[in-house]
Image 1: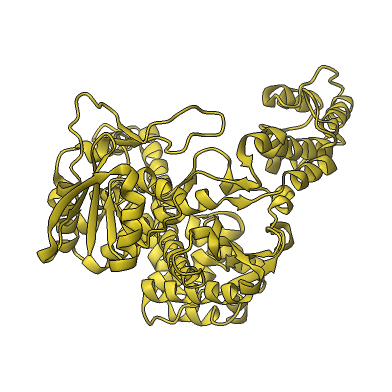
Image 2: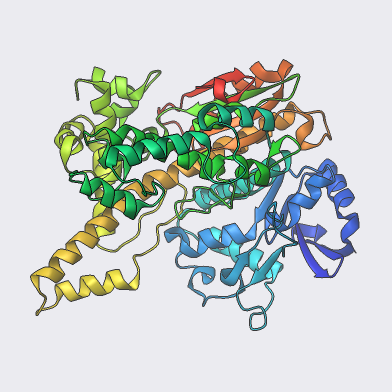
Length: 559
């Protein structure tokens, strides 16, 4: 059963029942919505339909109400507008409208920000307000008439579940120790400075100036540092760490250490701690579908780049544990399933996939297997990857052919589509113009080289898109299944945080905060959910998705 929610006036909410004989319409005060949702969840377990999960669910969570299922129309609209599977639908072929213009702002203000708007339109005075009922009907029609409705239904359900999970993780927060974070920073940076650089960075800066004979050098300035390195006789074209590591000079170790610690201080230093940790919780603002491949992004806080140096500050509450889970070699295993490559599936069955590739005789060492696989998925054609690719192609022709075909598709300017139906964008107008210029009768060699280079670049994007987008779908299915299983371990009717609950997600890794007595059961559910996600995407095809789990008191203990 579906229940549509819509705001019809200040403080008033419409509840619309579009299904079957129960079709109807009612209104209630927004203040009464949490109790209404609580009753409906217990009585009929509906699938709530709303314009944007971020505009509805946080308020329910603050009232202790958990929603089992929803349809996030904003996220679903974006998928259906772009998917090749629904390309012929009225929704996909219609001119841009309010649902394309919907621009999300923060439902919850950032720590230093004032009040924020739930959502707005790019041109609110000129654009009609979106119709919830009409949009829901258009989306159902688009799915029903699509090339593969089952795939799209699963994708939209998983994407909407992801929106619920993101809101719940922000609500619950990642358990975080301010004291422990301060200790970790002091250990590598020295005491917290009142202003300027910490002690460790000042010491390294002095060492760099001495080694480069540049007493006024500001090592935070890349142009200044580059000139100083060049004046010291070093053949260097940038200050990127990978290039500096190739150099032999007394200043280089100090420069590399300075860059690492300066990044830590800027991204996760004391200012970050002051801004983002409140009441023992770090509350990232996750953006589901924030990347074109369907991967998540974050708005501030840098949750997707939490460095190893401060992971020890993620500490479970007294009497609770953290279950940290990591899906091993996710993207290569996704490629295995996409291609239906039985030889590669056998290589990864019940063991490390790269070790299995070595055992098959395709390469001699695990490091070579990893380099070759990354080269296949990301389009490396030179160096070690280029040398190993032919051997990988002979051993696993179906897998390599799939990514090669995706690359050729991108080079032509066409789109590719993930396992469940998320399609890549077409290249932009400048790309098309470059290709057209190169194909003209009077094209120059320079134009042709530029066109070939751009085509190869876009081919690398589509090569990886089909794998990365499908991996993002697997991760959504994994988390959605795990969320349901964790709910069964929570006291009936309890709030999200009353039992085991997800608190962190990073592409192929999750953290569950759980009462200590449930930790082993949670670890088992994490692994079972990974297997279930594999079956959802690939049916009976025998590709394994092993997950390593660690039951710990601190995230820093997990790796």
